[in-house]
Length: 187
Image 1 (cartoon, one colour):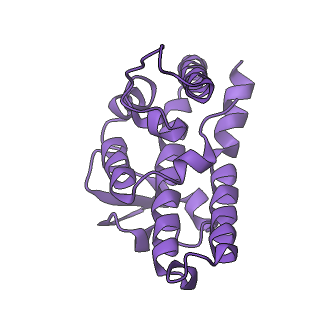
Image 2 (cartoon, rainbow, N blue to C red):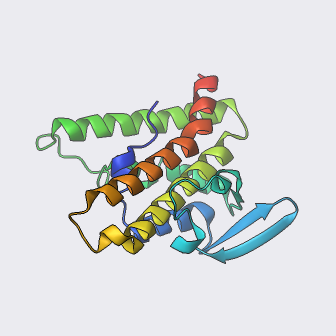
Image 3 (cartoon, rainbow, N blue to C red):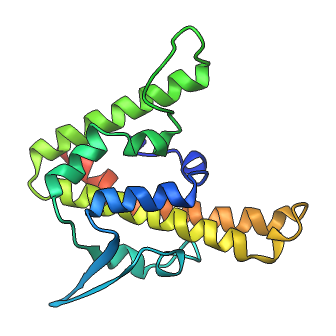
């Protein structure tokens, strides 16, 4: 089950990724729960996964103000649309390319799978929201690393770009692993 398109997702602009984090958390700041202690900080790339593979990101739990609203943003809103590169949710079937139809089909399947798995488990909505928050934090960190890297000064230096992209796609894969397993278990 595809829950995102890694290369499309990494093209999401940082301000859009930040907006989705705010939408999913219900707050302009990240409030992290670590044991019994909660900490709060602004959503900035420096507070995200700048290396594209920070394992601590997978263990952090972000506090969500309204879980049902956040889950509805995933399944009924446009959060997942950007993860697949589907624009505006409006489709012109006559002008669609084969790639557009493939993305739209994958998007519908992902949203349907999230809804079905949510009906099978009480904790699934929370897992889904946390996963997509982490994924947008990875996107923020990836964009930050691209803008700070040596290769950003030399566009012809593709090695650095490919290495950063590889780290970020690996981090996304690890991020979505437990959500994919949970969906597989529910069906």
